[in-house]
Each structure stands twice: as C-alpha cells, then as structure tokens.
Length: 395
Image (tube, rainbow, N blue to C red; front, side, top):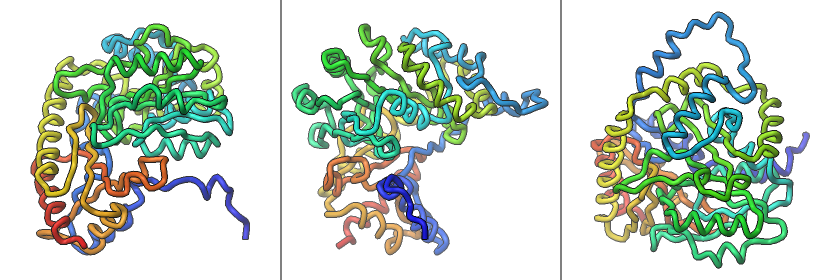
C-alpha cells in the first residue's frame, strides 16, 4: 500500500471542524445543536449583492484575469480608501477566500525552514498553511488573564533568529477578539524595520470593532510600504462565507510579482463571487450600523452569561465576533466531544471549538474554548443554558 506524505501526516486537523461528525450524529438522534464553534454568521447576506449575481447577463462563464476582474479591483480601491488605506488596483490580487491570500503570502515570501512569529492563540489554519509550506511557527504567548494583550517587545526580540522572515497578526484577532492599538502596531513596525521582516496582517474582521474603538490597518502605517502585506476577505464583512472571495494586497512589487505566479497557477478566482463583492462596495454607508449593533449586543450577552458561571473566565473582546473562555475542566477536547456524544439539556446541546488547536505550544489552551457569537440572542441564551447545565454535570 502506498504511503502518504510526511506533510500529510503532520497536517493538523481543524479544531473548528473536527467535531462535525459528532454534531451530525447528535442531530440524527434528535438533539438540537447550537453552533458556536464556527464563524458562520446568521446575519442575512445583503439581498442587493445577491441580486447583482442573479441579474447578471453573462452568456459564457469565462475565466477572469488571474488577479481578479479589473472592475472589481477598482471598486476595492474605493472601499479601502474609505478605510484610510490608499492603494491602486494593480496592488490587489483577488483570491479564493482569505485563506488563499494567507497561503500566497507565506509561499511568496518564505522558504521551507523559514520561521514566522505569531502571537498565540491564533487562527488555527495558520498552523495548516505553515505546515503546507514547510514553515516553522514561533509562537509568542499571550494570556487570557490580561485579555490576550500583545506581549512586551522583548518577547519578539528574543524570538527573532536568522531564519525569521515575517510576523503575522490577525487584527481584530480570531480567536480572541483582541483589537490591536496604535501603540502595539508601532512596536511591531519597529521590529519589522529593525530586522527587515514582513508584516502579514489578516484583517478579515475590520468592520467589527466595539466600544468606540477604531481599526488601524498595517497598510496605513508609514514606513512599512515594502514590508506590509494585507490579507482580507468578504466572508465575514457581508456574511458571505460561501462566496470564497478574498484579497492579497501589498505595495511591494517584487512580492506582487511572486504572488501573481501562484495566482496564475490556480488560474482565476470565482467570477460570480467577484460580481457579488463588487456590488457590496456600493452598499449604503449605514449598512454596518445595524450589523455592528447586533454583534455588540450578542457579545455583551454571551460574555455576561459566561462570566456569571462559577469557575469560568472570559475577557470582553474588543473586536471580531469570537470570545475565548477558560472553563473549569481539565481537557476541553474531551468536554466538547462529551457535549455532543452524551449530553443534552431540554433536547439540545452546544458545540464549541476546543482552544488547544489555536496554539502552537503543546499543552496550551487545554482548558479553553472559542465561542463564536454568530447566533441570535435567543439561541445564545439557550446555548449558555446548555453550557451552564453541562458544567454542573460534567465529571
């Protein structure tokens, strides 16, 4: 029997999706499952952008340019300008989701054996992308006790080696919801300039910043023009996860030229979703007001319920739509599986993402979970009722 690759063996499973078979089995037993495990919003995708696809007059569904349709890239220039990011359309490569943008960044800038510094916990798929490219993640720990604030600059300085090529952040952060301040971004900027590193900035949740705080893009920091690479997506912004449209953006022409070769190898991004994304730029300026208010109220409810449970720690996230919680259990992988296999409360249970998969350091996050507040408040309350009852029952 042929043997699979070492890369295939090392590829980590998704902590977000690996429990799906147990959730499906629970549903077949008649158990309602509240999905707080994945960032799939229940907010309606704006009808106007779906109509743009429905009413298109395409006679032949052709390949688009490998960088994406020019009309869409020019529309994106308008969108980014509204967010204090000044670029031209030739500095944008449209990607198949934000995931491909991350992969393009790693493959274009790093060789096998190179190192990338990432504050942990971090988006779990960074592990998978790094493994695919043969790149080593050097984690910089942050903790739930101080709300996952960026560690002191000394932690980064000590982590830089001759093999270090980049620092990666997700801002606002998935899974913690942490929103980076200007002071923290200036620290990262100084390190990148001192050690000649790339700064990869995953900004998928730009619109979701709370309590009056404002998002600051890595591409808006003067001095980082040749260092900053932005990875973006429409998935969360417009509740269009199935569209699979993202963006890879940099002012570094050498990086753009390299990324374009990877873009050409996969031919082109999806046409219909580019039409959808182009229409999204023309949504009314107040579109996000209602969405923002809804997520704020969901966040407040979820965190209030969690903080009221004995033994549970949950800081208030500053952005995105995730919260990390420390639970009074010794192994959240086992606990989350137990919730789906053996537990129910009023005919329902809750599905969460065990947090160990969001860390690179072995053993970290075993008593933590990530919860996505992407369900309506009635469902969040019901899910928290399940969790509260489960914690009392679990041994």
